[in-house]
Length: 322
Image (cartoon, rainbow, N blue to C red):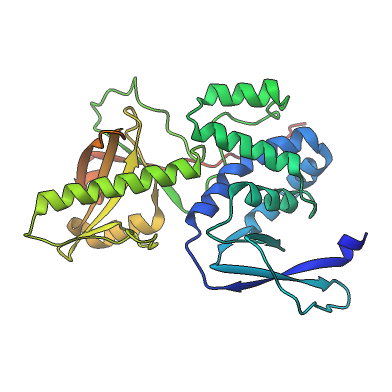
C-alpha cells in the first residue's frame, strides 16, 4: 500500500540514439504477450479488449544521465534527494541510459504490461530467450524451450513467424524473376534479436565502407556517417559528397530480401541515381570475408522488375464469428 502512494519522477540529462533499445522492446513484446496469456490470462484479455492500445503508446527514450526522485501521488510533494539509475518507467515512457542492461529493460517492461508491478519471472523469461537467440539457437529449439520447458503453449490464433509490424516499414525482396526461390529464406519481420541485428548491421557497414574505400582509392572521399554513433540519416555512407549509400547486411546465405524504412525509400525516390543500396552478405567473421552487391537507383530497378518491392502485413486481430 505504501508503494502505491509513492511514485518515481524521472530527471533526465542529454539524449542518445534509441534505435537499439526500441528494437529490443519490439522484439520482446510477442514473447511477453505469450507469457502473459498463459500466466495472467485475465490481464491478457483485458489488454486484448482494448486492442493492446497501451502498447501503441509506449515510447523508449535513451538519455545520457538518468535520475529519479520520490513523489507522493496525491499531494505531489517531491523529495529533494535524487537517485541515479539506468532504467525507469514513467507512465508510457521507458527511460534508459546506454549503460542499461537488457534485463533491467525487461523488468520495466513487465511493470508496464502488468499494472505497474515489476515481475521478475517475466523479465527472466525474456532474458533467457534473448540469451538463446544470441547463442545461435534455432527457432525450433527456442520454440521447444518455450512450449515444453516453460510450459507456455501458443495462444489460439497466433500465427507462427508473424508479428506486429512497426508503422511505416516496407520490406523489399531482392532477386530477379529467374532466381532460385526453393532455398530462399522465408520473408518475415520482427523475429531477429536486436543485439545480433545491431552487430550484423555494424559489421556490414564497416565491410561496405572498407570495400568502397578500396574501390575509390584517392579519387573520391568516402565517409561513414555512423562511424561514431547512429546518425538516424536515411543512408550510411557518402562517396565523393554526392553518392549516398544505404547498407543492408545479412549473415544468411539464402536471404535475398531486406527491410527498408519509409524515410529511406522516400530518400531513394528523391535522389534517384545518386542513391544506392549496398547489400552485404557476411560469410566468415573470423576471416572477415563477405560479398557486396551494389543496387544503384533501386527505385528504377523496381520499375524495371530487377528488384521487387513487397509490403509485409501486420497480424490482424482474430474475430469471433457467431
